[in-house]
Image (cartoon, rainbow, N blue to C red; front, top):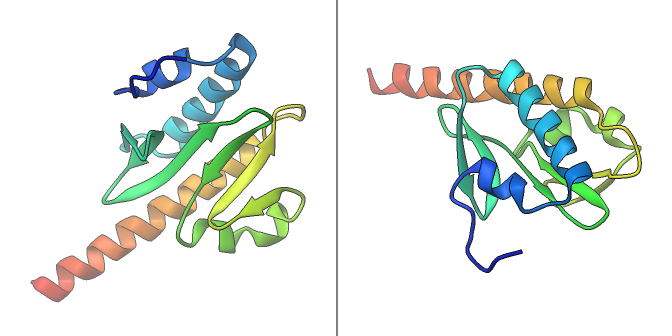
Length: 127
């Protein structure tokens, strides 16, 4: 791994072993399908998708993929996420188990609705 921070999601993914790259690409594709209008960027040195604000982040670690659907995405899916280790605002999907792509897609769609709804409210209040 280089000391240079990646500037794109492609650069970020390229830093990992092939099996991890594959999982990161699966998550990326799932997010793109669930939020086709979202933009890709890097924030906090992690792949980030934005749509009317930050949508979701993800990052690879030694034994898991961290997924961040903050602030409310994790709360809304608490029951389904109970099988996974969690931190403040994060979920850890173990690398030795299948990625829950359907759950990730539903979380992303939830966050899209949340951000679009919040942006519409703000617009109404300003207008």
